[in-house]
Length: 272
Image (tube, rainbow, N blue to C red):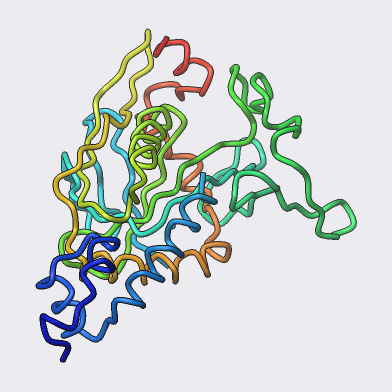
């Protein structure tokens, strides 16, 4: 094992580590070089991001999260976030059941992939796609036919198995501001234990829950950071094979069945 005198103080300062933290990494099989490389790769990964996991859904009338595997309902989640990205998905109108396939989907929120009438795989830019415009919802209303989600992979407590939380358009503003603030400081979202909570919003007959400003609980230890970064790399490598299901699309706003859906346009107008 490296002795105290053998650590380069300049390297420790650059990595933001104490001697004790460097020793903890080494004792668990991580070199300082590997730690530095993972930090650099994570910075590149998050710069490009706009993460079959257990899914949390938003309970619209209770400002709560529900674990769909266990049924547990919680008001707050304290999580580590190894990976997140934007996704878009378009399903046929009046789709029922969870086995329906999307007409088009995009795993980066930029380029959509679909099959044409001849069964040939085609691609189109999401920004200029006619289905990504207000007023195109085939089921009526002023919303978009294509749903935009922020897909966030989360690690609870000491778990190394990620769950997934899909944030609807009403929650994008709070999430994007939080991410921007962390990046402005030159930090990584994956470096912190974060608390997520919801608040109930109403606009006429509509009721929905949306994300409040996430809170940083604490900075992770170097060992925790390395573990989260390794999971993030694995998720980034395979996230394109994790498709958005119809249940993600239909339940994303968390609005009760008795209430109309909160469209992106209506939510944005209510927030103004």
